[in-house]
Image 1 (tube, rainbow, N blue to C red):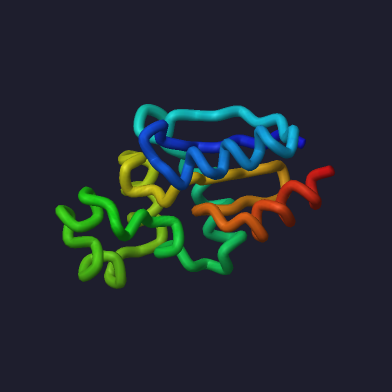
Image 2 (tube, rainbow, N blue to C red):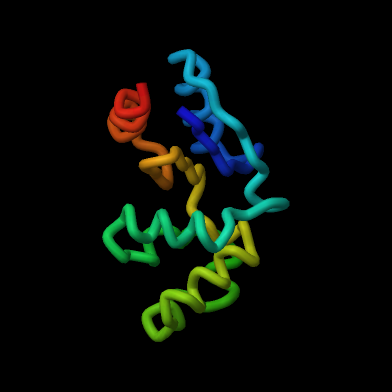
Length: 121
């Protein structure tokens, strides 16, 4: 399985996810999300995984989300506009952002990650 994890080193949730993967012996490639956000193609793939719910990819508790007033702007944005915004600013992307060849997750919930790892074996 090729597992890519977009993460931020100061994010407690990211550290939990990486620790979970390390403890379970899962190989992954960690990518710094601020310096190298997910590509538009990866974001489109994740939107599809989440049934078209682009809002689920946003870090709604982050400073950038609040500063840009995205709570009120996001409902009026097209999916392409939202994806463009996410691809341009890694701070806006909910993390960790994990992708395999066939699946993906945002955030960290141990049960969901267990399923992701099990499917990939």
